[in-house]
Image (cartoon, rainbow, N blue to C red; front, side, top):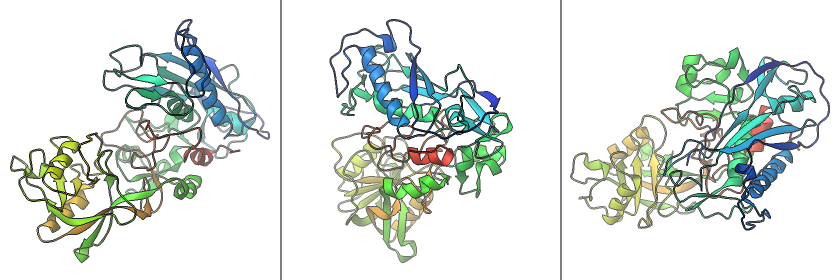
Length: 464
């Protein structure tokens, strides 16, 4: 289920006010819902997961209050932050939908207290640094949440919001509202860039505190030093767009786990550790020992035999199967390999950049599988004509979700995903992070805020 963020009509304001010392932020929720719906829904409900509300609307307000208090306790500001919020129908179908969207209502530059000149700051951050409300009488961020979920049977059929505080939702039928609210508030507080996805141009000629921390390792520079054409290339340069802020880079080893990898033992010329994407199905990878075997390119005897979409003809007993991405689901490929005797699977990408996402679900699959890049996989397949032995493992020498140099990757899929590209962490991060483009079921964001506070510090927030 996709998470999108919304950039509302931004108001560019030049501010001239004085700064002062700051304390924990007070985030005030402003209810924009009409009577009888959303926060005002009178439907009776039982308390759930620590939420004492007895109506649906009351429970929703309680969830927002917990999220606002959680972020407020992390950030410093003497100026109240006003969050406008409402439940309303958002883009949705029986199988997919937008859960929420949010963003700042204004941005500011060149105000007393700004840490960098000629750079945009989102409204709440600018107010904090200035020590005064730079846009009095207006909300600082606005958020919309999908009111059709659990109401309209044609919107994420069978799903409903979970309103508890304990994140103990059932992922087959419930979506953790608190995780989504925490995610969207973070966007409004500055976890987003203001660069046009269509032209690569900065907003009204200025960069922002987020985009100056974006670095393309292929082009070798930060986004404020790239041309508009280079930024258009970079936003889909999957695996090569990273965050170089000092706080995130310092904190990453305390948050991210070992990297899913394929370690090659033989031949000697390929010896080393190669990045991989682990699958959402089958057996998990292990950090100690791993799974070692000879690699064999599959042949299903139909069309492109190496795609593994039909029952596999060659012998795979005790082998690690090499399979090309495309033509059928990842689960189909892996299950076919397992039925042919494989003890592990490597899916080779068919895209020039990035790793196969390896999503899906099939309880019949009991072996581990990973996806590798087109370049790495092509080398493995070529070597398999003679002899190549590798290991599927969690490699503790590298961080899952960061590049070889320890810089955390940003989400840069090809083609671009409007509202999601660039303003989220890459999906290769493990454990899953709050600010990935998809809300994951294993989050506990009010307990473990992972890398988000560190990013806030990188863009200019003072932390508690």
